[in-house]
Length: 335
Image 1: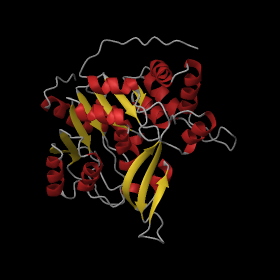
Image 2: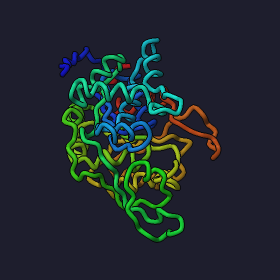
Image 3: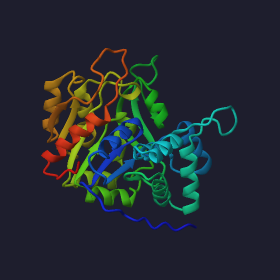
Image 4: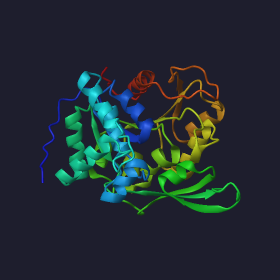
């Protein structure tokens, strides 16, 4: 077993924790590392598709895909960082057994076997990549998302059924009525809870609502840490209704669902792109009900909001907006 002694460099800027998964978390991390170098990503472990799902099934490990994406997002902008970011995201072609696997997933799984620990392996990976921050799982056990969905099958719009698994839920066109994870009451990663307790700011979203953002709060230790934190809590709202489980959402629906499931977890700010809010008054009402101030700002470089244009947050614009909010939260932001 390899022992890892993690040296902690001198930090500049406030300790900030970002919760989420997938592409949404990646853009948040790219933004945050522009305003502080004390960033911790707390990442979901419910993915059951693709390369992650295969490694999860074959090796019994937590799915590494979203963890890999977070590490790649924290790589630097120099030649070393850019190269390693591409290598981590590289997928093998062909039609053999390795086809479709991401290099980073295999590397992370190998480090887990070598170090004997999930957190230790991720810390080794971060050190190898020169990552500007730390990546931690929300739980050290793989989770399964379980949802009650009305109309999961188009032919039976009024039937309520149970949908199991992240991929299946992402693909459903039904209405999600209830959300849970299996096993029930999973253990939170202790290092993730420690980071949340020490944080001066906590950023959630954007991302797939039922599979990347809300499941974190179904881990009791994480929910309690976020709920009881004195940190400035910021929710970065999605740009659009998206696909699958949150299809058809208007802007306020994200907060409505949050309040239905986690009314005890309050926020300080809701940050939304000023060109993608379709119901400003209701969104403001829901924000206030959650104890939050609604802030709208330019977060996308593309100003065309037609339906046939793909949108994503711009990391530089998001960084500027978050820096301003963290400053408003009486946090001294290093830039």
